[in-house]
Length: 304
Ligand SMILES: [Zn+2]
Image (cartoon, rainbow, N blue to C red; front, side, top):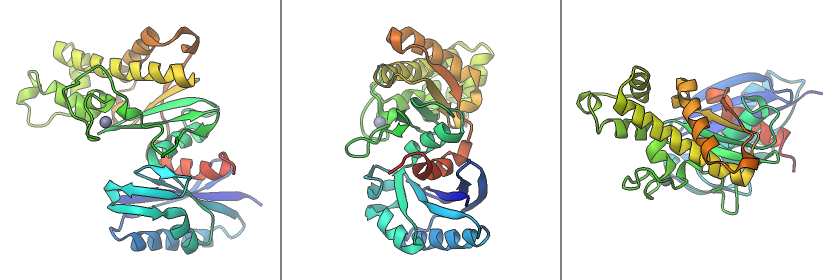
């Protein structure tokens, strides 16, 4: 009998869920708005789980792997999710009794990293670091095939590594000078806005800055170099700890492709401890589905 598993990615506005086979095929995907009321949101997930399973009567569903935007303890207990307006919730228990299946929970960024390691850009790697560069910087660390979540669920928060750039800028987490304030899309735009022509433009996107850098604009070049240097140094620091086979870059800014990868890789090579330097840099591949695959991987690859 084929084994299947649900991956559920609970975001602030949308819940994405999919049924994934043990071979890594996404069999069905659904999206619906996240209800503000916790019970209503769980009821939505449960009814969709039941509906989807009706179409797969010959398969054995082994569980539901859930990603949430906050720290998670022991793959079950969520201690506050600001984006969702949640306090302390035992998601494994609350959702588990509704769906009648085992439920495991992880931080969404860690889960996306696991998904990429299982079926995406990091397939086949046992040791992997991912940076998801968008409005902020998320990501995660996979060590010897397992998510590093740490003692209080805060492991893998790679966007909040303190970096020696823009130490006067406050991060969304309250600290100053996190990787995120320099290398996220928000940080890139903020830095660009200190210079012409960006200071006079009504809207600026990270792509505008990368395009201007490619076209030879010196200020844009500097901003893009700083972002690449910060990411490369962060990768070098993690490299000395994890000694990964691969560093993956995902998120909206990764649409810049080699223009993002090359300076990151150069800064990594300059800063990393030699024996940890043999690392492949690549782009994430699963996009918005990474969390769904990661949810399924919680059951298929993470064992008991
Ligand atoms: Zn921070």
